[in-house]
Amino acid sequence: MFELTQGEGRYQVRFRVLTADGNGLVVFITGGERPHLGGTALASLPPQGCGDLSSCDTWDITLPGHKDKELARELARKICLAVGEPVSVNVGIHTDNASGEEIRYLCSQAGELAERFISQYIVNKEKTRLTEVENFT
Image 1 (cartoon, rainbow, N blue to C red):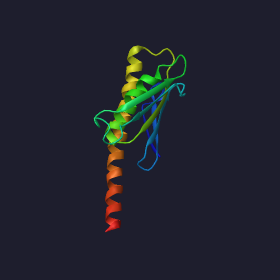
Image 2: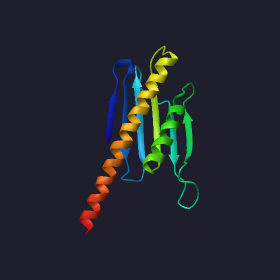
Image 3: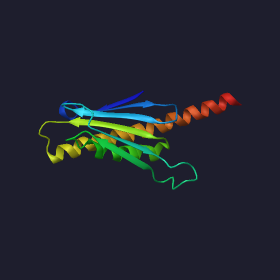
Image 4: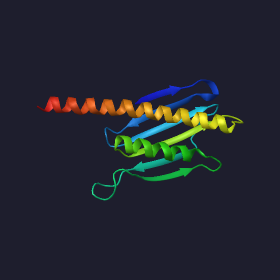
């Protein structure tokens, strides 16, 4: 499991990821004053030979009254394209009476955590692949 946290108090965002050994990722992004589950998105590359691998298919769902699926869809797509695996992103960030600026800030924090995760995950994935090749020879 990967876990990254950024910010404090009502501006804290937590980014947790469970991996399926190269066969998919489940991401939980929560934060603010009342972490919850508000929206979910799933992103997947098309099967080999069936489409453009620079794009991915996405599906999303939200709980009534929540807008978290927008961020979930954006980050699911970004992570999927970067790591080449199916990705489920579950988001629930809530800060009471948040202004538009505060919402943008929380979303940018989540985006920064996604970038940090992608960088770390790709490096770890490459190290694992190299170790497997070394062990094989």
